[in-house]
Image (cartoon, rainbow, N blue to C red; front, side, top):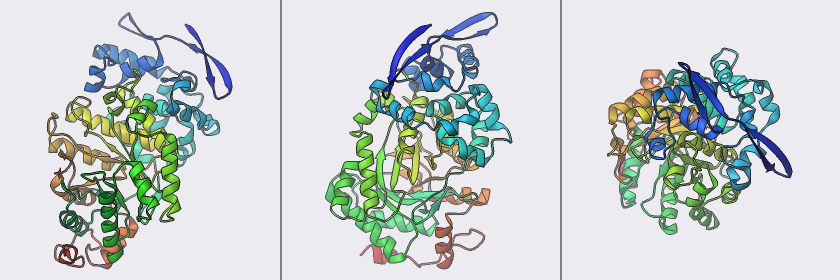
Length: 472
């Protein structure tokens, strides 16, 4: 045992760090600290293997999971995977922890927490009441003890509702981000993709463009173009150009009609530094976005397992736990939407379709459990051991789990970012097979203009939105 002194805020606390162990077939397996235990208990993924963090065998992994199941949830408040003094994300997690919300589950171990989450007692209302008492590490830990169906069942019970012009997260609804990217930011190409998606009922979450360049002038023109189309046809959605937050701040200073303030975030201070951000900049962006008085929930975040590892900023913490810590960052800024871009970083972090599927379900579960409006870019890069059948499977599983939104990309092939995602037709498939509707405001707009009938069938002949006008 190791006695270690740490200062949380102005209060010095002595923490007893103990070894964790489990016995299988008379063989004892020992884990030196909590972050090692979390890493060894994590399902197999290539990123943890490359970082030297994963279990050495299936037996080693099961032993870690057995040991993890016996860890009291209270332990995560005293033994931090990254020190409080050196990491502002750790400070954020501890300083914003709601002890009153934690009280109903404070007596549980990780294994007991899993059992409780799967029970009928863990209702939607109860999960909403305790969400601020759950730390990211608690969420990551319990996810490591769950099968895929467990992740789906619990996430389905979570309800997180947010609102801008359209309302996200309502039961019986499934939304989409219309992503009309273009490799040269050509306005005619972007407009054509936008109209194609809108005609197929896609875009109720937002119209979000990844610009080919971070030029302030170029991004400003894209924002103005989307806003002009939205205004012209009174479309109940919101826009976002996914440029760096500092560029968005300059656009807001220039009175550009910014709806959502975007930023990629990670779960450690050093990883966020590699993105050129910190918590202070995120707060500045949120306040600037609100100052335009276009909406009250103005932040849009993207995350993805492996981001901290790719910047060598993971501190020996496994990539899924680092990802869950990014959700603490997101939660602090009351976001409109959060999107895990699950397979985008590549096979160095999630090797194949099986690992991508597991990661997508983990991310959605952890985000929802922590109270976030989670969506997922169901995607893979062309050099991963995955194909569109894998994405069909993950898309269906996530929609069953109550995922807030997915991407709508022309042909599921993003020709600017050069990766494979989900198409406009994939969104229609999910809505039809599961009987889900778009956001209510967007649904009413589609019905009003006869672009969709009450049975969710999309009209292929309605020309309410004219491509010719937008391509002039």
